[in-house]
Length: 114
Image (cartoon, rainbow, N blue to C red; front, side):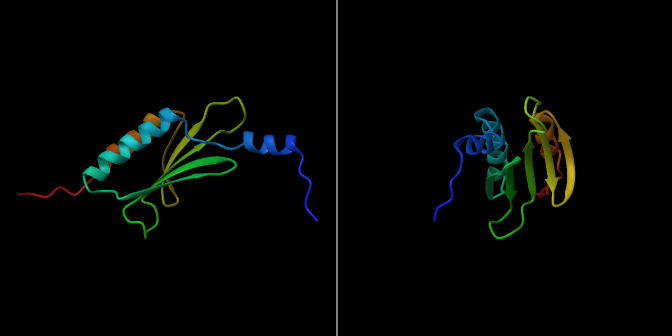
């Protein structure tokens, strides 16, 4: 037999999902595309969970993410919290996406001579 699910319970679960809005996605993809053009990154993934949205950045599809940008909303009505991770290390946490992305811009890169 099937399971009966209340529509009000289902809509409450959907309300707790966190997503990147259009402006956030534009900013994330603009940053990502500059690094792809420079040959540093090659792939990305976007995951949505009950409590967070994650934009993961990969050097290769077969590796662990180099960086993950997480968006969480601590409590309804509060502003989003953004977190930049490299592995398990939190590099930056802020209420502003721009501050988190600024850390990526300052990451050291290999510069070839000649």
